Image (cartoon, rainbow, N blue to C red; front, side, top):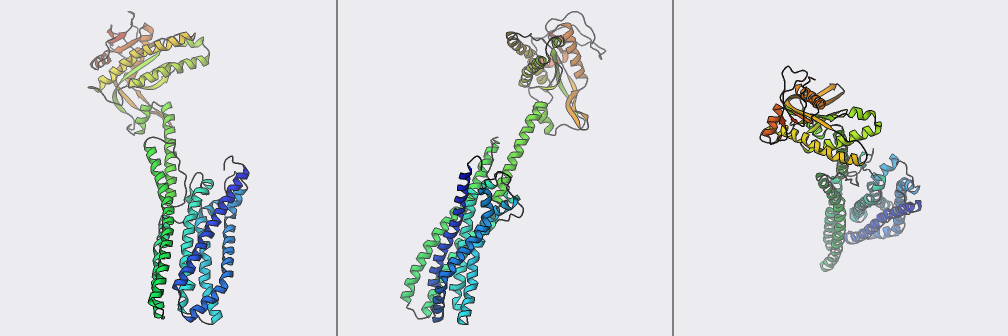
Length: 538
């Protein structure tokens, strides 16, 4: 009920409570009028029937108020736990008994309002028998069929109206999160039952009434009344019954259609929003039937999608999004798979010395600033960051997607463009750092293309996706050599040839062969930036 003052809350309780009672009383008073009309037109005109009718009219002024009072009192007692809970303005969890009564209320109240009609259909024949000593079948229409049929019509109308009232006033307050169908013991008519009630109310009851008028007309002709008088009376009664049931049918049709088409329309609208990627969707569940279950299902689906999106976003901040999508697709076989990729290693020159004279918080801020710029550029170039190692990055190209005329050439060209572009982006970052009074950064990088084993490694309960193999080792050692020899970028001959075929690498120039630890033969390299004559094995 939110922050609404307690007085306003109680006023709302009084309002909907009064509305419920007025709906039930109004419908059944109207049913009383239609009952009198149908009885006057369908009852037998035999002397015994007329004598019994006179006897009934002496009892009805007492019987009807008593039944109204008793039924109203029973309904109030049934609804009182609901009213008292909201009257107290409690903000705690709603008791299960109150939830159960709320779900059952429209159907239970309708049944309670129908009971007096059924009681009358039994009591009046018994009182007639006790008073006159016998009972006749001529009394069936006026004492049994008329009251029961009109009482059923009134109860059905009450149910549909109450279900509409509860859907708009009570259900949203008691079940803000939905799940009406999950309340233990909360039995409520389903869509099929509601359609059956509706069908009987607007089809069979009017047909029964019209058939009764015809049979009553035939019976009165047999009893000696003039045909002209009977036809005129039947015509007038039939006209009244026709317009009465048409009006009632229109009202009930609109109520039933609204109770089904509106929530179904909201479900369809919500699903369309979800299809467009909008997960800010929540349906107000308004029933415990199949439509309510469907609304609950849509809410549960949207919640699951939100959780999935949150997990994916979190996962994507811990694991590179392209790796995340690759893992979730199930494309990674057990033990990994051998593929050709271009591996780029880069790190910051003399960062260890800088870190020794810089506060730890500033060191972390510098690394985050550097990695943010470089990671965005790597993704723009089509690669992914496999891991961060201190101030270094291991970047992989050409492992997943395949584009260009030659897949390996496309990956190598992207790696070279990325490495060259890193220098430009670092220059932009250094401009901001120098303006803020901080030291500029220097970058070294190396690229090698070859076969790698891509897969998940680690313990049974903790593993990560990575690439391993000689290609990775060569790239790492070349990057270390690049740092020691004072160049900016080293690229192996194979990478250069593939990148050149892919339209990149014009900035690179051929240098002498170098030796790296783990390789018995020298490696021809292309460099960006000067390299000193010394060729130390690392």
